[in-house]
Amino acid sequence: MCSVSRIRLFLSQTILLACFFGSPSSARLPVQHKDDAVSVSEFAARAASGDAYGQFKLAVYLYQGGYPPDYPSILVWLESATHQHYPPAQSMLGYLYEKGLGLPRDCAKAAENYRAAALQGFSTAQNALANLYYTGHGVQKDLGIAFEWYRTAAEQGNPTGESNLGYLYYHGRGTRRDYALAAKWFRAAAEQGDYRSERALGYMYYKGLGVPVDYREAAHWISSAAYQGDPHAQGDLGLLYENGRGVPLDYVAAYVWYTRAIAGGVKAAAEHRKSLIHLLTPKQLERAQALLTTSTDQPRIFQTQSVLSISEAFVESH
Image 1 (tube, rainbow, N blue to C red):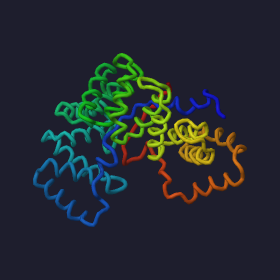
Image 2: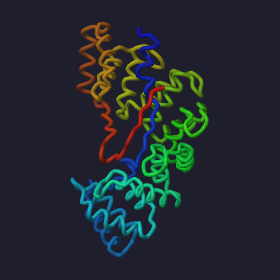
Image 3: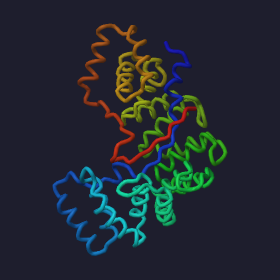
Image 4: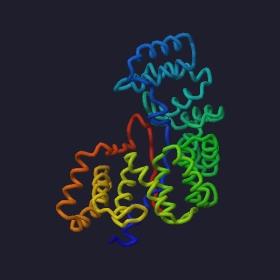
């Protein structure tokens, strides 16, 4: 049986700040369907006629439809749409400036474009602008202003803004520390499927921070993040199964989740799995290997630096 301090090894790594430009589900065009040619033709026609929405959609298609992306064409359409003050285009152009994609990196211009979209109520840009204030890139670092923009995005239901607001409340950055409010905003994001917030909320239930201690709730949220492919949540879930907290005591399941965490780059999971092996019978070990090989319910490994997810994460331990 593991000690409490050992259980905290993964669980203490659950609170993080993630700053997104969109997400794979919200930013991706339907490029895989049979009517793609019709959709792209419609975007191209609308773009050529001066329609800002069509110009933005065509730019997104060009960004995601080829490798490397056709940045000169992307920038032509984005700049045309931004001249019409179209918020999604302003936000995407800000992102390209922030990352130096297709043009020289310029965080001040990124902030300028994010701000233009944010002031029109575009929550993705509000979150991105908050991130610049949080890091001090392109603007003077100001956690108070970062907090206000994260809150503005969160109040519109933006899951990344909700997650980031929870992070600031958790750590008391730009505002007072308030675990109850942190849990509230992590829950709001978790209920929209944000894996970072699912893992964070699970940790708070495990520790009783802002919510009552509840191992079943902790296991519920950590499991949800693990099945999305979050490697740290997979390691956490392995520990819960090894200790029977919120889930049945199950060394086979623990071995399986440790192995998945190791595949996702969580080095500490290897030590936990190594110490677990002597508790498994040969038959149990064979079953665990079979589950890893044949399970149709095996989650994907979440790639936080995927080009399509366009994400950056700042992980901090409690």
